[in-house]
Length: 390
Image (cartoon, rainbow, N blue to C red):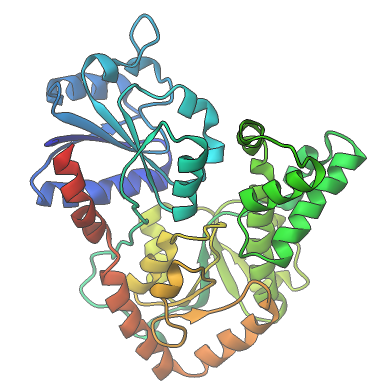
């Protein structure tokens, strides 16, 4: 395919990813149209003039263009992509169990790319009929300033760019079916928090098989779409505990994202709430921080762009890890690692870094080299041969 349609105008981060991808795809010689979902009628006309039947592909995040948007449906409720022979390639930036309804309503010529290898395995197991493209981890972005600030020039010690939500927001889903189910769900949550290396789907299957040994594959598949609240609960519980551990130890953490006012802290004066920012603004904050904290959103065989964004913008990346990232991250060399089961070690890790600016500079120099191997340019170079075969 030589013509590609990307999307912006809905989820800001995914639109930002699409902008970075567009730059690199143009470099590789593709014709690219970036559809603005905030201007559907203007964009639809331009897109139809751009589109070439049989030689155009959608390259979308999280079903943009495939969410039953009225401008993409004909009078019979069928996607125009089917009639126009457009292949629809969807990059899922979240776990597939969030998208059962849209998977059932997908266009005819549909293909899916995953950012986590466990997501791929889930699709192969429960949706074997769906075509899968190559594994595509998220990439990082370096903002275009000529020189990175040295550590003494940076105004913040620790920054975290990402949202929070109190786990109590998800308790209504845990308790809605009575005491027996409530205890069952909390048993799963406790298992995940005790051993964060586990995936949510593996823990759910384990406990279901314990209670119902004869459970079928079809029943397991049906169940998985109903456990997203467990994923959200442990994701935000863990994220909050990591930040709280630092804050309550007297370390100031600047947070940029929604709902951090919901995090209960013993020393709230150390939680500096900067509210939600756009992607480029988050990169500016990382660029002005000595340490950028990452807590993986329960990706167990994939990466998060915060890791590479941190490395590319000159802060020390402080993150948890997983078997996929173990092949990329080297503790004390290109990052600092912490364990979700030993969060109490975090304050000493941060203090030791801040006490040794030369060591931080050494880590960021190595981190920059790693980040430059994991940009959106590298991701599109990796995807290019596959795109040309479509």
